[in-house]
Image (cartoon, rainbow, N blue to C red):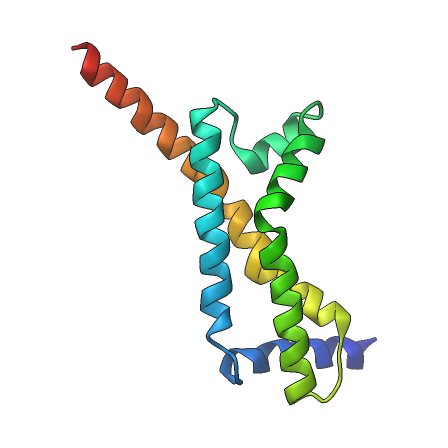
Length: 135
């Protein structure tokens, strides 16, 4: 178990300086763009902050997860495919758990961290614009 975990950590660290390292910027950026788009749509439709609502709103959880996957799913799958190509080129083997972890870090986490705050910021801006129009 110790050797297995050590290999995973070493392989993950090697991705930062290895070939195809530009994806470590590009894929989170793509996830952030989709999160901003979804967060603005949430604000427009009056929906609650995404990540928080997943845990606190069981009635809409399934629909919210489906909507989130629809936005970030392609980026997640692309992250797995690109990591698989990296692994085959560099490691001469494919480790599915490592590819899955990399995809979560590059696609899912940035999406979850950005969508809710964008929703809140957009709602605050929308509210302040309405107040200024009334005056």
